[in-house]
Amino acid sequence: MAGITTHILDNGRSKPAADVRIDLSRLEDGAWTLLKTVRTNADGRTDAPLVSPEDARAGTYEIVFHVDEYFDKQPDGEERFIDRPVVRFTVFDAEQHYHVPMLCTPGSCSTYRGS
Image 1 (cartoon, rainbow, N blue to C red):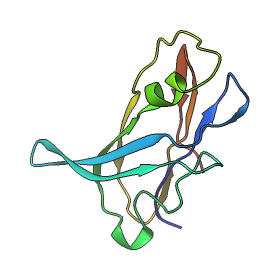
Image 2 (image 1 turned 120 degrees about the vertical axis):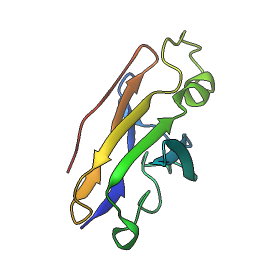
Image 3 (image 1 turned 180 degrees about the horizontal axis):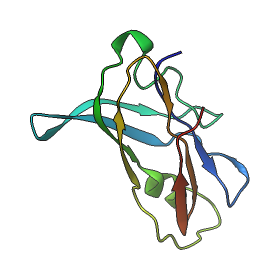
């Protein structure tokens, strides 16, 4: 399976981060072009791939995870340090699958190339 997918986990609460806005952009001619804005479902995933296998192209991409909005809605009111983590990555082979998960707490975030 090719394409680009993601999910968001709230590590502090040990649960998926639901209803988080995600912006996906691609670098085109030296400028970022917004491709789509989506929200995570109850499982912390998007309902469809960010980029479908048939639309996958090599290039540089950027995902902005709007976790500030998510954490601001949480009932515990924990102060947050992280607002909108940005992950920039390169798709070098459009035949491969690129999974970009976000693990976050109000004070930290982490990502990796998943499977």
